[in-house]
Image: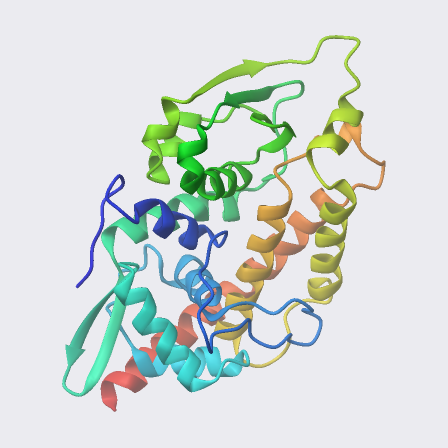
Length: 306
């Protein structure tokens, strides 16, 4: 078994992988083919984290046989070899615990990974994930020595997931009040706190908020992420496997959440689609959950019987 605590080597990488912003690319592992209405495709690891966060978390589910993951990912276009390679890689990286029951391998989240998935799930399931108190912002400044280039990508990925956009080199801003210390600690980046300062801030009357939003974030791309999600899920889940559909739904939704930190709609176009996409997600998830839980219980019973 592989376990890791925040602050140990690799902890930051594992945290970012859980959030889907730093999943490593390896030969033979590529994003799965697009499902009808879902143009981007998802890597198998992202789909597995969506599955754990959407159906397994807090249900007292026992370790899950590899055959269940293979069937789940196979229904989403992931070949069996890629599914098994993903399980092995996640175990090596300390994201999963593996146990052997007879000839079958069973997997569950490590305690540390489960904690990170639970934190991510709070954002996934929030009723209004794109809303913050009006006028509240968090401003962060840091200076990274040239000798610490190894930290740059990890810091940028962590700040992006936490909702920050870059105003200029070393100056970042996020809507709402962000617990920066907790964000950095969760990603294993406590040392960055020594290089940074952050403040709660509010724009003064002459500040053009709409202008700095467009400078810090790719607003048109964020709109497109919302609109793609709405197009894909507006008519509801596809008929068939509810377990696969809820997994795909969660992966699609996480992509939107990574894109939009909660840009204040009052400073954007009147038809800004964030509220609509959140409503579509909640409707689809609530409609799928009971059937997906029954499907998982059936899969586990079938695997146990086999």
